[in-house]
Image 1 (tube, rainbow, N blue to C red):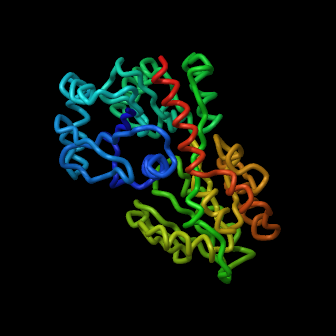
Image 2: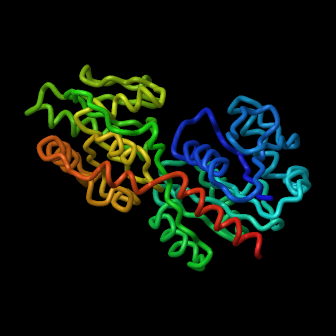
Image 3: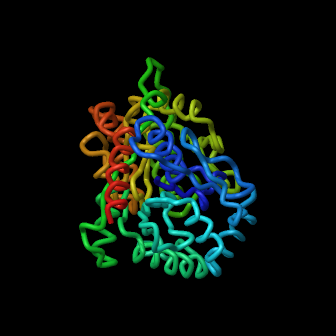
Amino acid sequence: MIGISMLTLNVEQAGGTLTYTRQLVRALGRVGELEYRVLVPAGGPNAEDGVPSVVVNEFPAGETSWSRTAAMARTLVAPGRVRAAVQSHGLDALHFPVGVMLPRVDDPPAATTIHDLQHEEFPEFFSAGQRAYRRRVYGWTIDRSRVLVAISEYVRGLLIEHHGVYPERVVTIHHGIDHDLFSPAPFERQPFLVYPANRWRHKNHDRLLEAVALVRRERPELRLVLTGTGHEERGLPEWVDARGRVSDQELVELYRTAVAMVFPSLSEGFGLPPLEAMACGCPVAVSRAASLPEVCGDAAVYFDPTSVEDIARGIDEVLTTPPSGGVERAALFTWDECAHRHDAVYRQLTAM
């Protein structure tokens, strides 16, 4: 039996990790060939879908960020009770898909998915406490995991080069796309760009706003639609529409009606939104950074995310000469294939 730990999943903070974890479990319930149990915290939201769950009462995460942080802190300092509870279910292998091994275990053999090493690439984006926590927890996660699942070749390379991990211990498994949801439709495109991202520093919103302002000198009708959290706290130009959190269906409608999607992120372990936009037939302009060229291939316009002028150039290019092949590129990424590849990792673990 394979245990899949959702103990540390933050369902309040939408992002690629949440999408991956939930879609993986759904796909395992749909096409997986093994027996699984999702480990969920006591008092927390029900995060599993399609796979039987087990409540770990020794990890009382509750429904607030504070209670979740408190549960993680207790497990960090004194992992014994939570570890014993996890090990009591007779698991043959354990997977930590959220990115950290908490509690740390040596038995059963475990795999952990590493989503990024952003605290090493951009330490200035983190507080001293966050850096210390990540160094410690990521340190034992990388050391103790029998297999590391990297969500891109880019992340795999960082693990091998920066942490000296033997290449055979790291398996790259790309994310998938929900093609039933993200698909083309005959909507009329409107003169606005869409950027779906919370206002985190690595998402590079300030440079994007400057770049769009430059483009608007020749295209004054162009607007920018932002989704995600954190925008309401900032002063925004009148040509920016901050929507906050939107439903999946609202996001699909934006992809289907935007003239283009722009994605100026400085750091991505994978980068789901550009693929989602492509799957909806939306032209995409993205950073030439981190995993994004690996994910988007030849179906996107690229720019330097550290240069306002080059972001503006990329926006102008995607509007003037939209790239082709986006739908076909996105079709290569499916959650069913992602689940099959995870099953191979689980079989590898149970043979150890």
